[in-house]
Image (cartoon, rainbow, N blue to C red; front, side, top):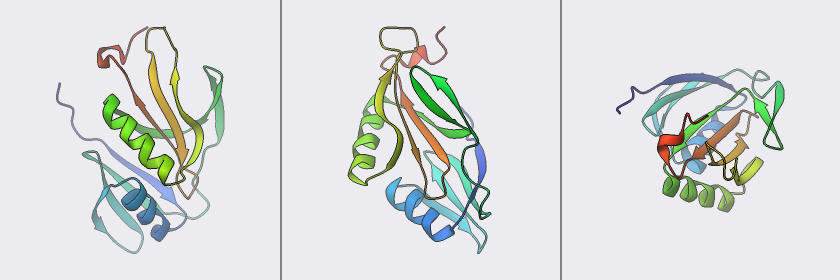
Length: 139
C-alpha cells in the first residue's frame, strides 16, 4: 500500500535547536525555511517547525500498558530494523526519553516496539515498529 505523505506543523521555542534536533539528531533533511519556520523531510513526510515560543509540549498523559503516554504526540511506524537503528542513534545522542525503547503489549495482538522522546521544545514524539506489520490495527 502506498500512502500519501502527511503534513504536520508544530510549535518550537527555538529554530536553531529544532534544526539541530530534527536535522542532526533525527537525520531529517531540511527543505524550505524562513526566519519563522523550517520544513523537514520526516521519512518522506513534511513536518514544519514553526517558531512559537511557549506553545510546545504535551498537556496530558494517558495510561497505556503501564506507562504515562504524553498527549499530544506524533511520530512514525517504522520497520523493525529501522526502529532498532533509530533507537541506537537516539541512545548515542543522549535523547530525552519519556519512555525508553521497549516492547509493549507482549504476547498480545498489536505487540510493538515503542519509544517516546521529547524534542528541545518539549514536543513528544513516538516511534514504533511491529514484528508483523499487518498487526498495526490488530484488536
